[in-house]
Length: 393
Image 1 (cartoon, rainbow, N blue to C red):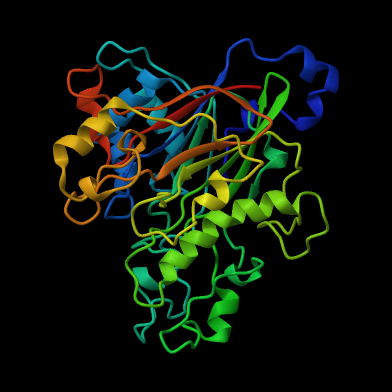
Image 2: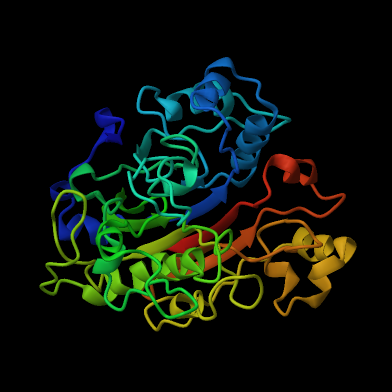
């Protein structure tokens, strides 16, 4: 099930080639991703917080958006509830009024849809010999919609171009990295492996009309590569969830009957399309527990423009002050986007905006103000930080 604001839909057919060439935005388009870590413990709790207003961390999220002012933003870990217009409530009760000297902000278009978290599979996916519970959902979750996704936009969303891959089977991905037991046998029985979905939440291809030009937002949120056993099922799933976009690009417009979206449409993305892969990838290129190369397969791709590396003074400061495992990390601490337990995990670079090679980044950054910098008090909103990039189309 999708949730749109249909009043503002603009069909792709309305943008002629001449219009696309003559209406290039004078200002860059700012795209952002922010894991707000707002996965509540109880179904309906997010709706209650949105309706009541005044939730402390949602107010911090709202002020962060008002300060950074992205044109398009993906919010990860925003619980999905099909019975609530969450975007409207978020704008009405949190974003419309300026906070702490900021101006209010409005997003006329939004997208949300069902995700795999909390959706019971009816199978024993965690290998404990039982069925039911969060570990046997298609994606780990205590109730349907937990840890969902929400996209907000100032630009029109092209409804007829929207694609979701929530139900795409993991086994259908070419070269799928099937988890194995230490003795080499398959962790999942064949009938389970054939049904198991790749996405722990979903993969979305959303297309926006930016003053006559089209921009794809490829949104996802792979599973953390931990909380499993020697079969490394979550690590391998994380690797392949990130690899999905590589396959999606390389498939292009070729005949790929195995690459089906949730409506049955086949094929990947046109190789001349402009896109940004966005989300909490749950993989650091140098540190942490992800499978080696999980991020390199995207960061090193010739069809990705990785020239602008989002950084912040706050991340470098936090790594220095917190110490612990951060002192053993190999990556540049200024590039970190998450703040975790410094004894067991440390801070990592997990959140990304990866534009296609035919897009030109103008600027980028991570909203992680250091002590004494404006907005530092907002770093408690989440254990992740908002990442933004300005793109000239």
